[in-house]
Image (cartoon, rainbow, N blue to C red; front, side, top):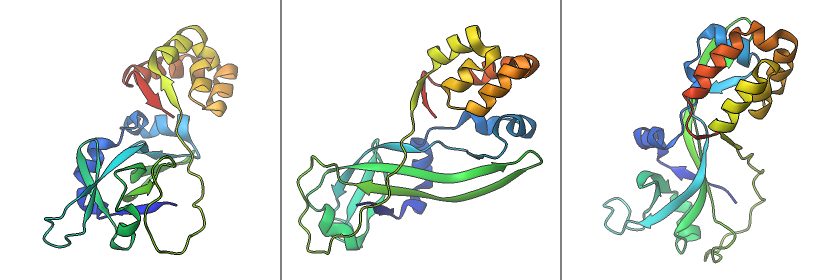
Length: 206
């Protein structure tokens, strides 16, 4: 069962430190329309990993407070109504997302955004928490991003780039097909992609 992280809106700077940057956010509007028409492009990629539940008995507002930490940074708290559920748990699985986005069509790019959010679940290997609440239906499954290698992407760009090899590798099937029929958008798109790939970390998610 998923539980929301409380107070995450007050920890935006820490959340931004944790979330991976989406390099496509820096594309021009023209490039966004060429590569992402019909898509929503987020400034930050979703984070999926683990979080620590840390009791804060000295908290002046709530001696039963349970803080949520990711990579050593506090991002919020366990809601009061869920404290009993997490009292004997120290590590949880967490998904963090949200923030600014751009909705891209063939004609325009519109800016928008939602509040950052965090959702926690207790790993199955942890002991069952002590709680006296009625069970609730399981949350809908969350899609997990796939990890890709910058080196592999560069090799595909070099040898098969004008046929969209690196696009297929990144899961952009539509752009891959377009590259096949236009020789990498007449080589211009192929060259632009090189600079985008070089800016990526050694491993990245799609």
